[in-house]
Length: 62
Image 1 (tube, rainbow, N blue to C red):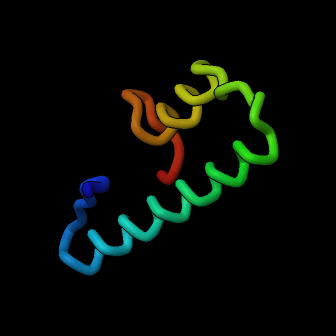
Image 2: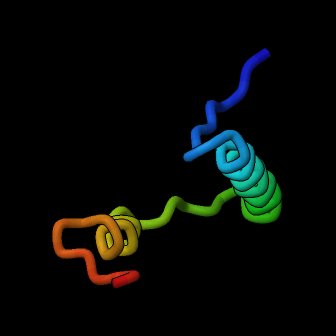
């Protein structure tokens, strides 16, 4: 058996990140059960929210 790898700044943070990942997977499971035909989010919207924090011209969290 296997699972995802989880990293963090220390062991506690790595465990925290693993727990967050499990919660997201849990929410995804139920979302797909409720809406099996749900379409993925548009790439433009994903990019907008990712790049506003991590992009060259980031403006979130300043």
